Image (cartoon, rainbow, N blue to C red; front, side):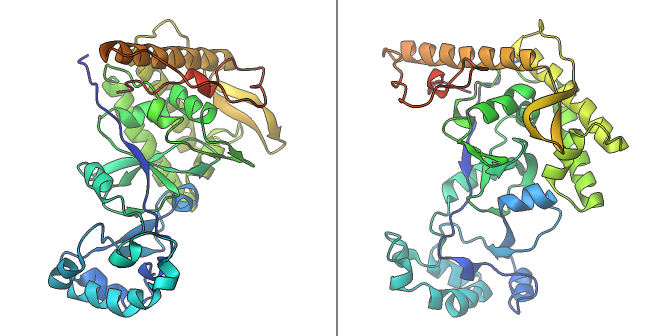
Length: 353
């Protein structure tokens, strides 16, 4: 396999604070006018809940994709959008409303944090991997890159063709859980800086069986969501339910096993035996006590190896730059749980390409 060392970009979507006037629904009198304008700027406006609850099969809100465009440019090329902004948005963008957002009053027609440069980068591909930032399961889906996503969505660019397969592997999902930003009841808050940004991706490509399996997983998950009027959370709930024997769910389970085998092949870890089964989880409720997963021992080995690889790359990068590999002192506080010897302090800002 050839080397595929590509920096992977991850960021949260736009921050539209004080900007609900930008958002409209299909019953708005402006909707058809804006949608039918030549080279329309109107785009679906997606939150994390749209992923977890409908897998992007239901679009309820829309907004103008202004990015960092100037007001004069909008007036010249999109007269209907210009009128909408002047008549509907401008009256809400007062000095009093925007005083807490430094500089926003001078570009009031834009989102507070439009992330235009990052979005242009991610839009070089038709899709990216989208996660709800607050989610029960650290599983993303392929999402259209030309839509608008709020800061409740984590976006990971598809800089390499096998990235979605890697993201569905047990190692990546366990990494996100272990180094997430914390737990919010039954959900986890995904951290970009402490989890995604420090994950050590394989230098070699995942074999085609893995990338094709990941694409099949996404297609089946979306189809199941549409047929059952549910989202990605319910798809994963069904995968983890022993009594769920729908043919689509059975195939989704099989695909996770295939993906794990192919992703670990990219790392060269062919000494691990992957056996999926329904496994009881600690702390689960009576209605949520099982996971379709590898054994805890195998998952722990994967985390140990990934953490070691992260350290190795950090130290190699420090050596190339002539500097010393230094780490932050551990913060004082509660000790880590006894079932894991890995802590966030074991992670470094190395070359995770």
